[in-house]
Length: 252
Image (cartoon, rainbow, N blue to C red; front, side, top):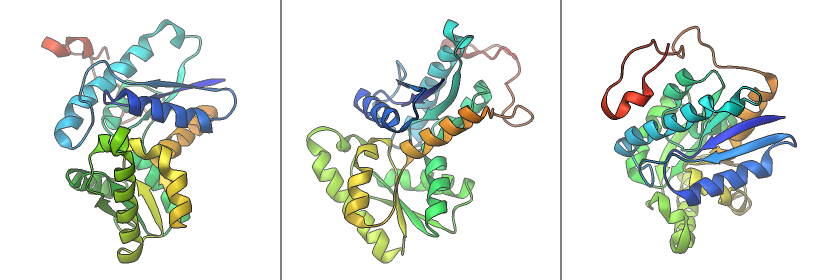
């Protein structure tokens, strides 16, 4: 029996519910999914500015889970950061010894197994450059291009969902034809519920970062693999934080 936390670092409860439902569908028997979002932060994450504030909310959720009484008897075995920008992932790895995985990293690792060249399709053009930085960080620049569908992140909910799906599919088809992509990576957590449909319609693998990250974290938790504290992900040294950040002061 293990618990994994799937944290949407923005305040869209619809997205939180969506990623939680997908995670619960695919985990093995005996794995419990906690689908959560912070109590403060942006409604969605669309670029560097939103990401900076959302990271603090993400860390607050992990901090509270790590301090919860039930953590002693039934610790969280791993954390999924359910945002394709991998918001706050490196900081989260410093906060907990449990493994932490973002959607972009998980999706790229999985895509590289099934395709030699692939494309990320993200909602907004403003996200293209940040994702290109992540692609480079994860060593996939020679395999992966990043394209935008030209819609808002929250368009994948409610009355705009059909329009957003159409724009996503059109851009994916362009990637297959012009970029010679062999697989499509969905560049937003809010797309998790359309991956199977798109895969059938395109006829190539479609990688959903939520599913990829959940299964990777579940495997790491089951194997008892923890985040190394020997270097960059060591717990931060004790020091004072001030003002609104006082509650985040590291204890060493």
